[in-house]
Amino acid sequence: MYKALAFKELRETAWIGGIVFAAMALVILDQIGGAADPWRLVSFGMLPIDPFESRKIPFVHPGLRQNLAWVAGAGGLALGFRQVLGESFRSTWLFLLHRPAPRTGIMLTKLVVGAGLLVAATAIPVLILAIWAAVPGTHAGPFDWRMTNAPLRICGGATGVYLAAFLSGLREARWYATRLFPLALAALAMFWIYAIVWWPLTGWFVALVVDAVYMAAILYTTRVREY
Amino acid sequence: MNLIHPPDKPAGVFSCLSKRAFEVAIRFFFSMSMLPGSVRAILNDLQTPMKATPPPFPMPSAPAIETRGLTKYYGGRPVVHALDLRIPVGCVYGFLGRNGAGKSTTIRMLTGMLHPDAGEAILLGENVADLAPATRARVAYIAEGHPLYGGMTIDALERFTRPFYTRWSPSLFAQIIDHFELPRRKRIRKLSNGQRAQVSLALAVAPDPELLILDDPTLGLDTVVRRDFLESLIQIIQREGRTILFSSHVLGDVERVADRIGIMVDGVLRVDCPTEHFKQCLRKVVLEFAGTPKPFPQMEGIVSDRVVGQRRELVIVNYVDAHREAAESLGPASIEVVELNLEDAFIEYTRGPRRSLPVFDGGEAHVQSAGVQGAA
Image 1: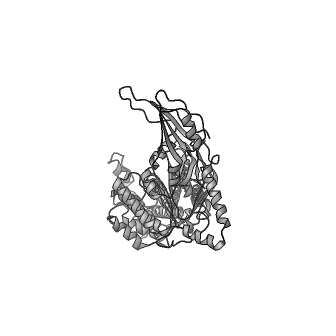
Image 2: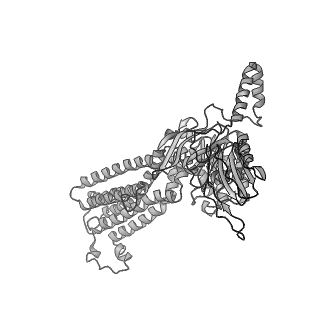
Image 3: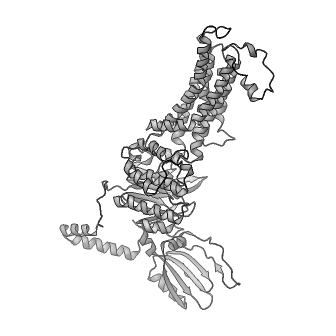
């Protein structure tokens, strides 16, 4: 039954995963040098040209982490809200939660699918870039697998944004009051993960703590909220 | 226990059983207890209604639905107040009330979608707060408006729902879908309201539930689809002895289907009795006067009292000799005691002091609203 639920979730959110993946493909192509800077693409060329445009070194040029943080964060937001508000707007919580399965199981399935999709859509392009960069002769620059740590941390950190969006959607507080509070905290955590590059372990630690706290909060809210 | 309270009286204060009915019950009890055991057993068997097919589910003594002091507040106001409900196994229970009376809130508490502020609800012997998935599988719930996943086809919806149930009957599901001639490959969002209701019914019935809780399942359906829906409901479910609780605003549907009704008024269960009993208990008494109608004395059981021109119209629960004598003492030109159908009885019983706007025709006709005077 969880398989059926996972398929249903995947069917409903695959398009968001697809958009995130496509955006990430642009970011990666930009790093490889096969496409224009995505921000210049989005702004129809109105942004000034990056003087280092032609000399980007994958995993060294800050554009990767910056674009990755935006794309993964936006993807996390969209996925989290879609999974919760989609049920709320259609009143399908009443249908879904009456299925004979523990509510915790239903929510965990949703979370696993959502977080898995986000991580897959963001981390797979990063790994593709890493594999490309690891092949000698592809670019004029150094590469070490440890250089993937920072981008992958951002992918992991984006799950915090996803869980925060999920929790914000699930909580029945006012939108202009405390409902978006989890998102504010997740944004701070994401900034920490993005900015603190000199002590990588803290980034993973923050990501794990944020995820654990939000998972616990989601499961608690699932139990106490009314549908 | 049968209960009908005047609408302004809290539950538990006034029993619907009239004194006469109570005396009859007592006499019957004693006459039965005088008979030898074997004769009593035969008589009991004779009194048991015959069924075409034996019920597939065991008939436990515990009720299918039981609530004890179930209460829910919204904004400090009790939307459901100290609800004590007991629906026996095999009963088709019509749950009635005006908009905002607390029906849907009660149903959502029964299914665990809302948490009661006080009291508890028990489904099939298990507290709703700790309802095990296995028990939930025995309970079907159709929520108001038939919320389903609009992006799925009927086939996809079946594939999604089926793995949750061990007793899912694909053939029954297919039968219902085919009976309603529903397009299996059409997305739910492209179906009409009636078709969505039919899909909901198929999904609810296919897992072979013992208890069905339907929140206004015919809301928004046209007359033909509604009739079709109800007939299917009766054929598919009732014959197998399942318990059904359904709320509705269509009294004709309730009258056709329900063995027993409950009426919520402002969050309080005022009526809980067999459908026929409710109709029998309520009488409309029309006193025609030559001049200005005289005031009717305050008495037990008066639900409403209003003056329409030279007529005084009273709605009385458990119309007895005392009411008749009081009416005669006013010296009216005529006294008419009218039996009400369920819809009229429900309207008279629940509409309270605020009535629809009177229609004035040439200044002759006028309606005065005396409001509810239910002294009990």
